[in-house]
Amino acid sequence: MTSATRPDQSSPAVLPPTTTVADPTRTSGDEPGRVRRQLHATIPGCWGALAFACLSFTPSLLPRDGLIQGIVTGVTAAIGYGLGVLFASIWRAFADRGPRPPRPGAWRVFVISAIVLFAGFFALGQYWQSQIRSLMDITEYSVPLAIASPLIAAAFFALLILVGRGLRGLYRWTVRRLDRLIGRRAATALGWILVVVLTFLVITGVLLDGLVSAADKTFSVRDTMTEEGVNQPASSLRSGGPGSVVPWDSLGRQGRKFTGKGPTAADIEGIVHAPAKEPIRAYAGLSTAADTEERATKAVDDLERAGGFQRANLVVFTTTGSGWVDPAMIDSFEYLSGGDSAAVAIQYSYLPSWISYLVDQSKAREAGRTLFDVVYDRWSRLPQDQRPKLYVAGESLGSFGGETAFSGEADLRNRTTGTLFAGPPNFNTLFREFSDNRDAGSPEIQPVYKDGRTVRFASDPASAIPPQGQPWNGSRVLYLMHPSDPIVWWSPHLIFSEPDWIGDAPGQDVLEGMVWMPFVTFWQVTADLPFSTGVPGGHGHKYTTEQVDGWNAVMQPAGVTPATLDSLKQVIAKGDD
Image (tube, rainbow, N blue to C red; front, side, top):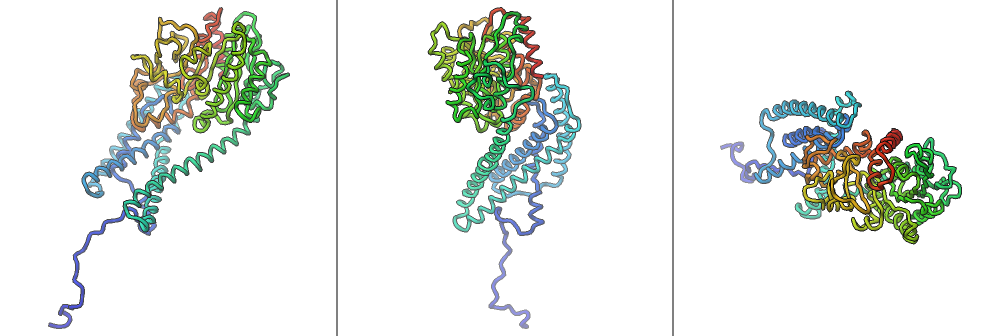
């Protein structure tokens, strides 16, 4: 035997090949490979994305144009992809195996199914949207945007998937660093915690605070402007006018509109066909005083100076975020009272309601409670036979603030003559109490609370307000709420829980085909929120002529005929144009 064939006794034994298990937290330094991994898609994730994308075309409360539909579809498809990947990983964990490559033809089956299903649901979605537009008498429709909606959806879907994979990459990087210091299991758990906390802090502490700060600066500048057609009042009956203790420049944009406009005595006489008075309006803006209590005191001082407590009817308004009071609401009150009325309100924020929902709820609560308390304190000191009828009103976030001055039904009944709240947000404390404890058999879109003895609800107060045939004596509290108003029905609970209002028979402007689906319905109704007032009056969050019938039901003014109400509705509808 030669040395070439003789075994080397000093050589190590040859070992069989071993299988290497890839570390999911480690990535290759190969850049092209990293890019391919970012663009990689899984079959379970794609099926989940397809299912959710198709379901996103189902109807919600309001019509959606192509842009909004694209965003809703992209977001829900990304959620579906994530859920598909999650369920697949759970299935593999139970089967105790790793990922497998797709079976031959799996992608072909998916692509064909995706084309057929997506095209079918896209067509159905256009049909459903057409039906919703018909219910609301909307004729506007953009064909180019509708065609572009799948491309918009694909862009948002890709963006969200890349963000998700970026967070996953951050998690893996964090685990690799922690793995050098602590055990693998601890590093894995702590890595997820750190990434979730960091993401939350970035969104809420950097992005949200930055956006709110920028919005506050923008709208604070806008608050210094005066709307075209609004002039400083020449009457001493208005804040900012002669003798007022509140300077015109301190009222803010909405405050100047509140006191600088409105019906005159002649306008009111032309509708009620009887002698009328000039209505009193008092207001205090953010620049009027440094804090809420001082601002409320200033407004009530000006109310008292103008003779507001000597009028027959006094209403306390809680404004929306920017200080806005719906002209349809206050004008209707003044017309139906024959001008023998006084109104008072204060501003608590520069921000519009949709931002105030997020950051200014506490300010709305404080403003509503403080203003009513100051008014009630002055009012209660008057002799009983000299007190005006005391009303409370608010729309949207204003109803939330207005509610906070009261503990419940009895408090509203005992301390007010009547109350009108329009479009109450779903998180309103008393609204939720009354609705959740409604009488058995009454639907959530028009609940009945304790036989309607004090509190009632209506979508169309021109018709009978349920419960019919039951007495409605003493103080009357009325909530106006459209079945299609997303402000009224939006809630985080939509993510996982079906609300009663979807399971019940739909309202007059909601499609019967609307159904609840986890995640999907939540995003659909969320997308409806910013466009809730972009529909004709009587739908969504747009309350116009309903204010006339609402105040008529609450105030029960003498001598008002159906012809008077019709004439007034024409005036209110014209003012909304």
